[in-house]
Image (cartoon, rainbow, N blue to C red; front, side, top):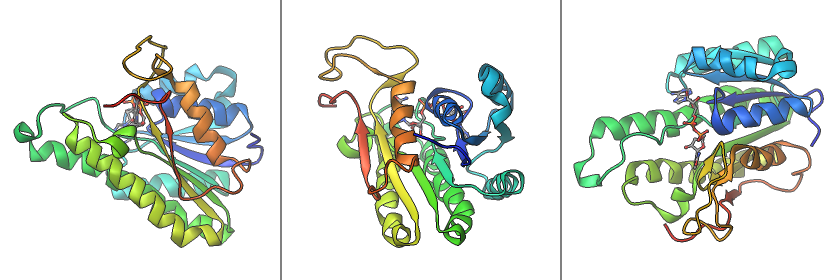
Length: 240
Ligand SMILES: NC(=O)c1ccc[n+]([C@@H]2O[C@H](COP(=O)([O-])OP(=O)(O)OC[C@H]3O[C@@H](n4cnc5c(N)ncnc54)[C@H](O)[C@@H]3O)[C@@H](O)[C@H]2O)c1
């Protein structure tokens, strides 16, 4: 993977899969705009990049705020000149678990706003620019729950299903004009590997870095014949 001369935006970049993706992109030559709703965490995340930090910019941005998303995209284009890569990674899934019959519509709406609309806002904010340049790589973070459906995470499963459909449909509009859109669907991914024979046939959870490898591959020119796909990265998940 060589990202020399390439410029990326990663949303939800302050920790987890987003931060691991920023690091891998920067290690391989990209300049990266890190966008996240948590400004304090964003600055700490930039510091944690050490010698790579001069390659990144930070931008506080709630992806569910359409105006702010436009500003983030404009800022990236103004500072970098071009944006070739967008990683729509920001998402909420750690809250609001439980039986659907007991769920609140306010919780559904928050997940729809961030997980679905955030991805749509950011994609549209950079898409015109990418199409003008005849080049773009967009990777959307979905989830294995999009494919299998997960009890107690019904609203979240729905939002990630939408991301897979969005990816496939949009790819049909833009692939022929040089913008390749794909989705990545992680299983259980964490900072440390946890042994768990019931989770996957690999008997463990996955690492942020392992997920970043797939995301970055799809964002690279090495993935030269791939568009409109949803790749699961789950150690061969056992049934949910
Ligand atoms: N970790 C997993 O096991 C797993 C599994 C399947 C899918 N995913 C998906 O991968 C993505 C990243 O997961 P993660 O585990 O790194 O998540 P995480 O919760 O560790 O980090 C998410 C980041 O997104 C930011 N964020 C949240 N809401 C935001 C908003 N409105 N605007 C901008 N930034 C916002 C948070 O501040 C945080 O820095 C998410 O879309 C998640 O749904 C993760």
